[in-house]
Image 1 (cartoon, one colour):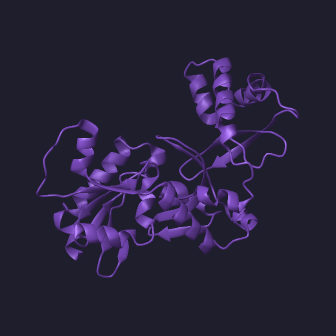
Image 2 (cartoon, one colour):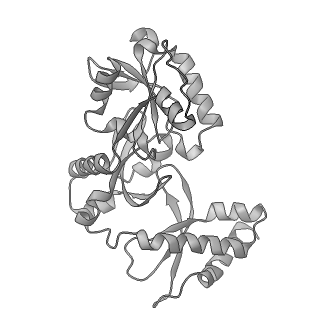
Length: 297
């Protein structure tokens, strides 16, 4: 089957694997634009549902091309739909109901297109948006971006949205600030010893999912400066965490940039890439910027 045939097959057969509902299932194909990805989505919903899951049909078709049967994929997609339904907020239009589900998310080039239709704050080449969390576990978070259309429905200002999102983020996804030595000890159980030449820290949230946004919590950049002793570089490890390097301990800027680009190319999932740039925080001027030459700081 080509992709068009696969779509038609899915439309015809996926409901065979879904539980029966009173008014039947409503199916719709739609181009989905998320913070860090876009794909052909199959939307599956019931009558009067305000929020509903979508299934990545592009990924499903790739699995089909790699040898999985259409029948097994129908079951997998149906399982995704049915597992998502119980955790969806009953009424996304009710702002009071979703206020404590708000989450700040930062992204780079991957998220700029989606952010064009959403309340957003820009920090150099990074963009900060707000999402509504509808499911979260230890490894991943299911969420949807707050668009300009949703903001109108909420009937609040953009400033209020970001204020509430920060409060919710701090409460549900508090900061985690650790030395790389502590992280290695946590993961391996062994003490690698202290690197006296270069001290480095990881900044993320308690779940280590979409944790790079913690840097943009109000007052966080200043708080990091207090802990590290002044100016510092920010290495964008991924959308999930960032590395903090005190300016006095930093390698050359070019060396840091090379490492970031190499990591993004070889180790970081494309949808998790934050940026190829390295950033600098000047504690005297309280200024966040793309790092220039190390000799300038």
